[in-house]
Length: 255
Image (cartoon, rainbow, N blue to C red; front, side, top):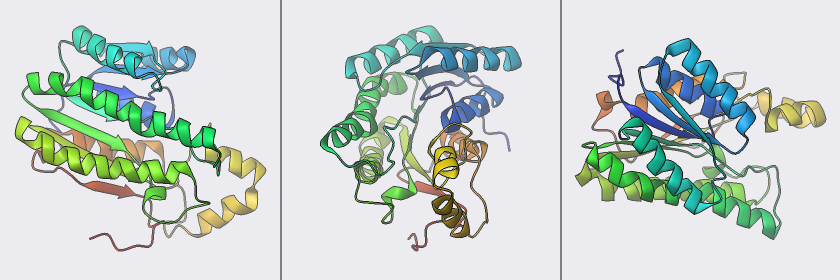
């Protein structure tokens, strides 16, 4: 399917590894010019250079701590300047879960999982509107949909993100801007929480695999494909949705 993304200008946060990097690579393959950010410059610059070398796309990369709202807004404006506008926004940064429940973690998840997205949307909306419309895709989690692990801020903030996406979809539709969410289940990455659990909590890891009807964890590229689909003008009538990508991990019926 031609997703009609060629020539679009896409911004992806948290793009140095995992789902973020896979999304950047997929959007570049579809013909997008890119603006990428992550907190650590080394892996980010490596990812950006690899995408440039392989696809020939423009890739603007900047080290940004998304907990700093002013830095997020400045990055969006600079990305729009470098690329000549913005058409697609993918929010993919999280403070993570890991069962951490102290007040410092609640504050971190609030700042990174919710407030960073707020600043991103507020800064990007005028650029999307100036482009004649566009798409925002927010990365939530199946932890937002069912009880998971322990009562932790990660679950709560990811649930709030789905609600925010739905409300934004109503408010921004008249401006031609679609807003959707993606909720991945367990997704494997060589560096990340599941790799740590496999090494240090193998019983928990194996129980998780056993609870997935597909019999395996997902790959970042599988989530990236869904993000590219939601960002595509081909599905221009799709907004306010939460797309679950989990191999059957969640057991609820989604109406």
